[in-house]
Amino acid sequence: MATHIVTLNDINRRLILLENASMTQIGVDEKVFHAEYDGSVSTDLGSGTTAGTLTTDYDTTDDFNYYQWLSANVALQDNTLVINFILPPNFAGWSAAAFNLSYMTSLVTATDSKIKLNILKNGVSVTSEDNITSVSLNWVDKAISSSTLGSWSAGDKMTIQITMYAKSSNYARTADIKLAWIC
Image (cartoon, rainbow, N blue to C red; front, side):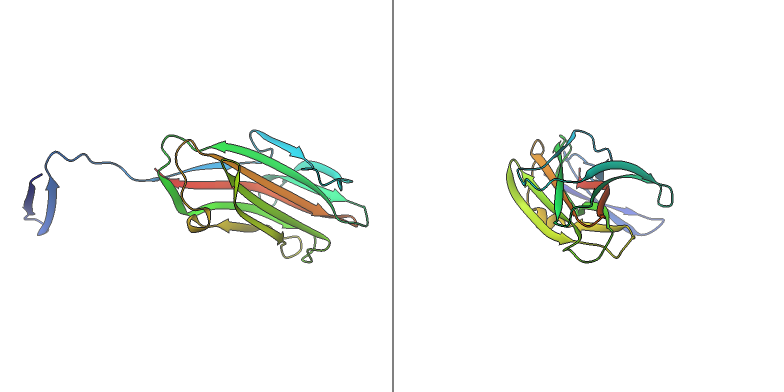
């Protein structure tokens, strides 16, 4: 492969051209799941503590849809949303800001309302975070970096499990999920 140097007189820069090399555009692509998440199901994942109500609604202030898990039971109750996503053919690796989940809990204390997030790659857990809470009544973003998710390939199956917990008329809410990758 030959390297040619070309001097651009008007700005006095050098441009290196690689003979017989193809140019590939590198960019970032994304998938945003809005509640009600495409291809999602609601399940108890065998917990047996599912006395509560799962609803969807619209936040007029922040302009997005969300799920809400509410329970009046005195013991913590839960419901899990499961979303499956096959990484597309243009997937070349995770962007630095690979995963983001918007959420809200009615209280800061994880003993009253919280969220647990589990991400699986082809059925094997890659990361799991429990006791996720927010400042009362404020939407917060939970980010997961590319280094936490590790190496993936086009065609890999990502399973996102979002378990919402609540008791004593408290709630947990989830809204948009954003995945970003290099293509």
